[in-house]
Image (cartoon, rainbow, N blue to C red; front, side, top):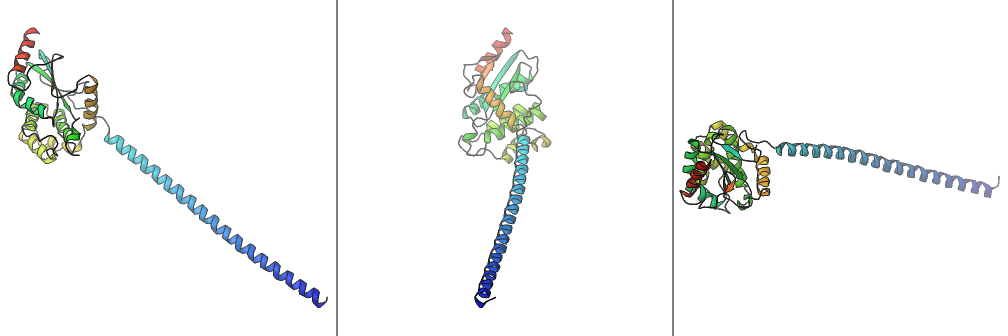
Length: 256
């Protein structure tokens, strides 16, 4: 073989070796990139599974929080039934614990209401509403107060009227942050509510029921608080002076 042929053979071998090295490097890069893709897919799958599990857990927690539980004395319409079932007069009272006019009504009539219930003259259907949460600067005072009332209705119904009167006697101004949980608890204790019942206020067990009841009430045509009905008929007399409501109940009793 001549010198020229040997040189050509050597150059081809060099070129072949260089090409093989390039192929080897390319294959390594592709293998590395493929490995990264596989790792990325595995990570994505793991993240997706964890997120799905977390979302499922969140939904389960939310479902638990939103589980609607009614107080033991609740009616199908969303009221707390107080007093003797056979009383001749049924008095429906719709109120919100942040409503200043409800406070005026309660302060004028709470004594007579308690007396008429105790005497068996009336059965009160009390509707504690929570539509004025927006007026307590984010503290949801209407809901917290109404939930406390509902809890007492469930555990110690004979203390509801006294506790309700106490809440209105210490009613916070509309637009304020409302009473604190501790202040609500103190008023309940001072009204004779058992400590075990007071301790359950923080659970918020009846908040979903209150929200549903509030919505249902406004769907029936009640548009403001306080609203009072005597045997199903709206009372249009003076709600803010002692006497007129009692007289209307006495008249309804005479007709029954």
